[in-house]
Image 1: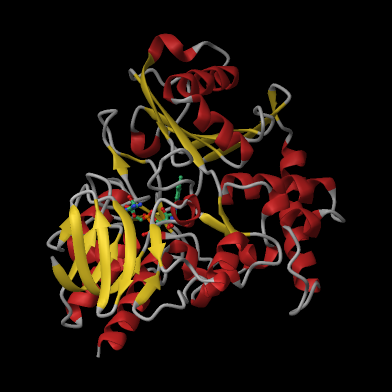
Image 2 (image 1 turned 180 degrees about the vertical axis):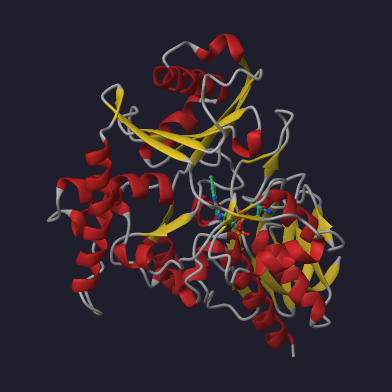
Length: 414
Ligand SMILES: Cc1cc2nc3c(=O)[nH]c(=O)nc-3n(C[C@H](O)[C@H](O)[C@H](O)COP(=O)(O)OP(=O)(O)OC[C@H]3O[C@@H](n4cnc5c(N)ncnc54)[C@H](O)[C@@H]3O)c2cc1C
């Protein structure tokens, strides 16, 4: 097979790159390792109802292109109005209202502190940035790091954190993964095509896959930073020193979801409730109750606790989460449990983690990752999004990065 542009990976970045390449009149093929599209935007239906194993919220929806795409495809999105009842637990009890207020104020305190640091402050870790603040600001920051970014605050760059775009969120009853999947229809995608190597030749590239070798004049690689760092794809010539330095500055967090499916017993809880165990083993765990009025609980943890539970495997993870959930509802929920899933991005060889974050001092690594140093070879994906767009770590950011890489590839081919 010979095409103008080969795109590695059919996640949001690969889909966007393929659409743009086709719109610019270039022939292309998307080589995808899994037997499905969407990558880390995946709606799992194996429990009988849809839930998003990866991306679930259309963040900064006031300017997110996936809102327009949902309208085009006739897929429903709803403005997320927050939890109806948010209940943090500590030491076996819900924490007092005043303590919740202190923690909310702690969030404000953190932002005030960041603003007083001014424009050109050193790229501290999130933990360092919070070290002089009140215990409540510190607790809020730790929670936010683990459950928002999937990583311990000591490893996260503050610059990277604050560069993220903010705005209202939208949710999708049929799942964000379903939207991304629908958006890929009609594109030239080869499933089960695990790419093993990409070799530069005089007139382009040879891309060796499990299904044979493809030739292309340009290549866009959209696999995660985790996949690149694990060396699952060999590059010839090898990756440049600046690119390896950029990869050193980035790593994958371990945001992890464990879903419990019940027989219809609701334990007195209402859809839209959210409970959070602040002292779950290894870090906090949140429990989203009956999303879209479905009989499932979505538990989320991250950082080292996410890694730990991922390594245990599905059966043990589901059992552990059922035990923790039981501690919140005051009875053993197991007799009503009908199944469970572990969305295990951390040990998945095609993901190798949740999403990429920059280490303290390495904020510029996202931008550096965009430049392969080899004519015709481009890297794109959520990890590079923060280089030019503050949409880092999101589906939208991955799409921006895919568009941008396809435009650069098309320009190179001209
Ligand atoms: C638990 C979790 C929750 C999240 N929540 C949100 C959210 O609410 N909102 C949001 O916007 N974002 C969220 N994200 C982040 C979002 O999912 C990602 O930023 C985005 O989906 C990444 O898209 P991508 O195209 O860059 O990478 P991917 O989706 O990872 O696509 C890369 C593709 O490459 C394929 N691949 C890997 N190796 C090979 C190989 N050797 N050969 C061929 N193909 C290969 C993979 O199978 C994959 O399909 C979340 C992520 C996780 C894990």
